[in-house]
Image 1 (cartoon, rainbow, N blue to C red):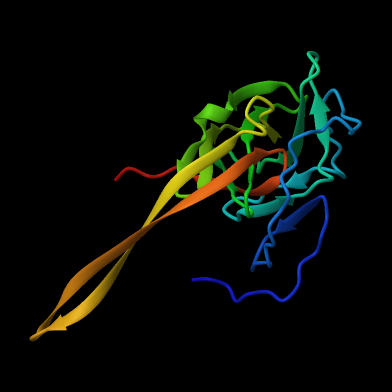
Image 2 (cartoon, rainbow, N blue to C red; image 1 turned 90 degrees about the vertical axis):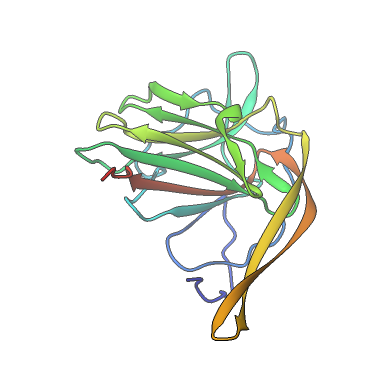
Length: 210
């Protein structure tokens, strides 16, 4: 069930939303980080790292002031770090990048240990389109402590165009029963892979096989 529309929103580098919704105006794509002072490693400071609750998705609006990293070869990426829920059993961590106007965050994801070392990762091409959004998930284990999501400098600035199809079923009374009539439409969507955008991040239990 959709939550009622909210009348206001708070602008910040990262805006966490644990419930409800916010107005989502279009963002201007950020395709260059040349004017930024970027760190060599992500900050794991507890005062700066947001916790990811279990089974409570978090929406992050990454604006033009998002923090950035610079690799040894000079490539720059925006990034966000979340502290993973500590569970005795494994679970799935998922990242969804949704378009904001023509802006689409180009995501990569890594699971880090307590010292910030990379344990597992998903590159940009592991993210697949689900409708208009990019999605990927990873299995997290008890030794995983942080989720690092970074933009992919190789694809930032590229434009992507897709045809999006929608289908609707309508119930029509026929005699003593009903008949479903299906209608559909197609439309084009264009977006620019960017260092900023809208992310939905979740930690969910593994699907059970009966």
